[in-house]
Length: 81
Image: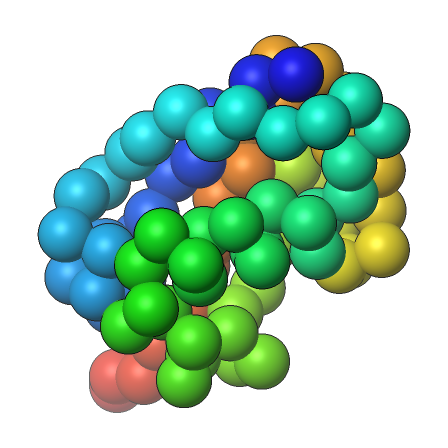
């Protein structure tokens, strides 16, 4: 199955791209996608525990299933004021 991954803010900087396609086995979960992304982009590892995740626009958890063709967004925490 294929998932479109969107990287925002610091995740985009660390991955070196704003988006990429990710091929995963059928039945994969968000955590499987994160594992593959950290393997491909090791600079994401330090922020992994702090990422908010969205699947098709809805907040998701690491154990949630990924449907084929899903859009997975990695949303780092932001600060400002």
